[in-house]
Length: 260
Image 1 (cartoon, rainbow, N blue to C red):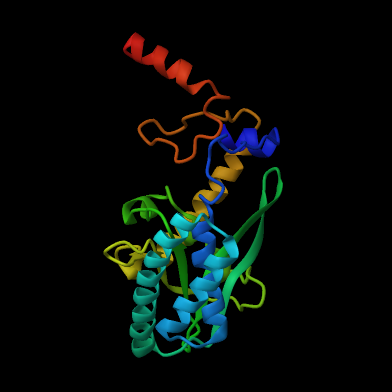
Image 2 (image 1 turned 90 degrees about the horizontal axis):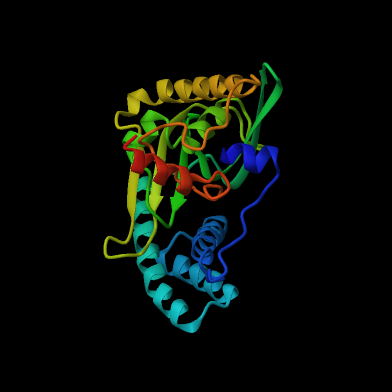
């Protein structure tokens, strides 16, 4: 139903009345700082700290929040610089690197051409011609189980798009590794999570995810396909911007009262 409300009806959710204006700034600061650091090519920790500091000052956050995040950004810088040294020692510098790169892949569907679009945080092509795709997260990471089951397919579909040459400036490439980086600056500093659990299963996961997308698009191209509010019982939707519009609280309560 969220797809119908947003893309068919053209409705967009309004921000909460009391939502802090700086709530989404932290993710932007982390992304901007990392991008500037990698483009500069000076991969020292103090250089990344400086890049984070510049991005932080540009946002003009509340002083208390800025002070709180400055400490966390320092921990993130320490973890990322350490991780980059380990990656460089293991595989050398990438031949190509693209940051915040947009991609577009079109394929035929029953209702006409379907366009799959996306933006990858970071794609690197190694000397062997294979890619590593890295996604930065300042919140919770999707579980490996959810990615493998198709509930969190964004990064996997980016690999499918890259194989088709869908990202401008990058050649078609098979993906050797999909990595999530959790960058919150807590006591653990950072976390890396690779998907799928068995790296040898990655080609099959990419092909399977693309196949599922084609099937889903074909299903919604049929007029009789309903736009359900909760299409998968037991799997709560991650985003509920349109739950009130679909009157989910009303019929959910009624169902519980009826014992359904």
